[in-house]
Image (cartoon, rainbow, N blue to C red):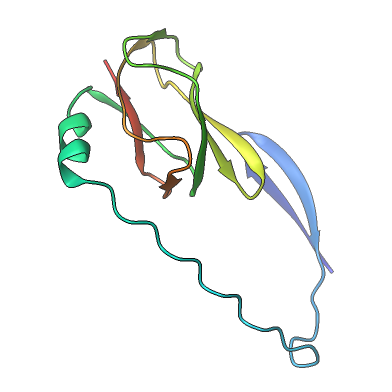
Length: 121
């Protein structure tokens, strides 16, 4: 067994991993999930320039909840979007004080790490 310390959003977690003999117990490959259709390009292009400050996902996951709305004033550290990754809800927060200019995702959207979620001014 190996022990690791993993830090997520500044919180440290101690994790123990057990190694097994992979040859002794073959595992069937999981079925590939169907891929979602790509978003329409015009919407992404129009909203991508709405605000000067971009708010991006820190990890790949699924949009669980949208906490802010366009036009809402937020302070640095206020949650804007909640992303679910590996059954954990990860708040994506405003990097500075300002006003939400655009929300570039919807609840249920799959997002990649670094993917644009919102913009603000």
